Image (tube, rainbow, N blue to C red; front, side):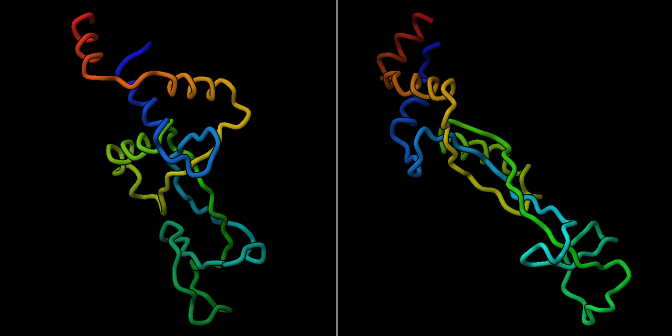
Length: 146
């Protein structure tokens, strides 16, 4: 199971900033706005055009007599986890390779969550950190021993 790639991940785990989080796991998350809540139960109700794909629009000039397909509604913003990695760099690489797939989301972020009470993942994380950093001699030896 030992390989230069796993050792490099272990080195990144040992040297990365953990955002003040014990046993962090990094997530690529997207914000999605869910409409349809009662306006009185939200801080900022919005007006949406139901004929144009539920697109937010400016408030009508006369809120008591809005256009036929424009309604006021509440919303909540939810964060959905799309991908997880042991390192923040792993998330950044994912976004570099796949960022074009996130262009339709309102917001994308890298978030550090905690592996609290997840002993299997903590054990894997600790095993990766215990691997020695690959050296050029180790890489050459592995390449010839194959």
